[in-house]
Amino acid sequence: MCQWDSGPGGRVLVLGDYRQTVTIVRSLARAGYEVTLGTDDPRSSTARSRYLSGVWTYQSSCPKRFLDVLEGFLRAERPDFVFVVGESQLRRLAGAAARFAPLATWANAPFDVAARCFDKSAIYALTPALGIPTLPWRDFAGAEDWQRAAKDMGYPVVVKRKDSSARVQERKALICSSAAELDAFLAEARTDPDPASLVLQKFGRGKRHNCHIAADGGELVAYFQQKVIRTDELDDTGIGVAGVSVPPEPRLRAWCAELVRAVGYSGIGCIQFLVDEASGEAWFLEFNARMDSTAALPYRLGYDFPRFAMRIAGARREGRAAPSSGAYYPPGKKYHWLYGDIYSWIEAARRGRRGPAELAAWAARIAWAASSSYHLTWDLLDPMPTLCQFSRTFLGPALRRFQPPSLRHV
Image: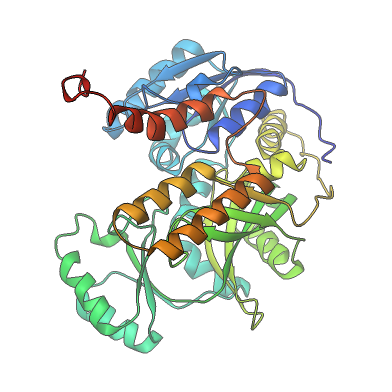
């Protein structure tokens, strides 16, 4: 188990409402911090957590308004720390770093470093220089350029956004297995509002490995590795719904250490690789300068990354080094995102994406994973966030089907 102490306490604004947010809230409150949630969802399920001292609701649709109201909140409330959860919030703050950096102690990587890590083009240019294998890629420079690049790379190829939180045709990534499929995408891309955000990359086979890291001044101080077993997409390009802890792979750990040193990283993050278990080949995927959405698994196993982030931020504020953690964690421990798995199953059934036999097998996998894994959001001592989310998404619509038509919109 991790031996880091609980931190000095203080008031923390946890900014951004995602599936990992409830883990952060529980961790910090149990460590003695007074936690306020900043969310853009008036019906937030995370807001039901018993560990929150307060909830601040803001509007996120307009970037300028978001920054203005956040500045007003920070100046009025003066929290000791701000823990930014989401990539979209970090990107906006990185564009106004001089304005916001003095207003609090930020439990995140420095804004300029985070922006560099989020920029896939910048990181893809850096990793080969560090000796880290990276699949061939190309920024968007027009349809003809991509057609030539894809032919040189060889199919399949993958299309994704530079911002990992943004979607391509409602997907995290889109696999094009042939020139015809890429041409079909490019025909639709003519109306894309932000083609400059698109990246083309050679497809690589294998399983995604998420390397959770904590670093101080460019030195790796904590490392946890997990493998994604299943995602919410049939081709495994989606969001992970099931995964397992694996022993630190020396090669991947060394590459993570090289990356954090090269960019001068301080804070927590997640560096992703694709590993082909048959051939042993591995490739860099992306560097997410934020808390990974599966942080509940290391948290359950004694690797408390929210507290790591606070200790690093506190040490940086006081001008000292954060302690290193070489603590052991057990491999073979699984996580399961029950909500996402059920939601994907319902969508697949509704759209006819899988036949009855496949759906039955999938349902059996959901039942087994739910009974044999750590849940990403459920906590017996803090049940309301998960119960609220399930009730709102699944139970509420089901009950409305049995209501008289006159009452369904009441």
